[in-house]
Length: 103
Image 1 (cartoon, helix red, strand yellow):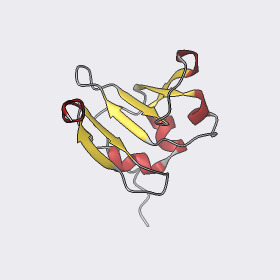
Image 2: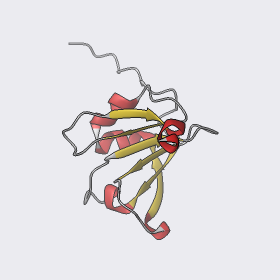
Image 3: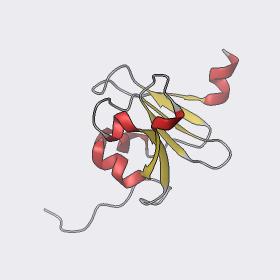
Image 4: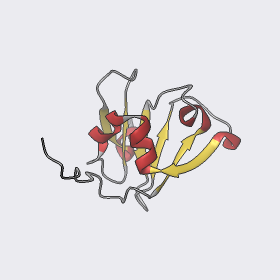
């Protein structure tokens, strides 16, 4: 058993600010959609539902991974891409956001 700390797999630092909503932070709803802004690579972790801007929150990427370790599967998600899933135990699907708007 190794005592070495695991390498952080994301290209963003653990303390980078991410956008999410209160229902995820409070543990009421799961993360079912994730995206990275094409212009600055900012992370967004959402429920997939419509939300009021008053519910928006800024939290660290590390705190989001602590809430949901399956987000580690998205560490290689590139800016301008999004991922989604049907339910928390479902596999992630991925697509470039530009492709989504063209369909």
